[in-house]
Image (cartoon, rainbow, N blue to C red):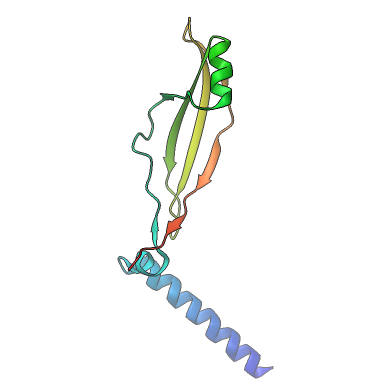
Length: 114
């Protein structure tokens, strides 16, 4: 029982050290885990979407489907969330008809090639 307790304390201490090391040493997480994939170049700007089937159907009905990407910072050790927002506007009046629910996309890490 004593050996299990000592092993558990050692694992907790090693985990705390690694967490502290990764968060405080610049570049440590990127070297070991990889860098986060790049953000889209047009963050926060509404762009018309034309390539999807939903956008084509909307254009036929006189509606314009617009999409934008929004970046939300997250806590320590996280790359943040990329949020996709979609709205549908009437082409003639410019009135927003539908706002679709936001889609949260978790950013992935990409390993560096040596």
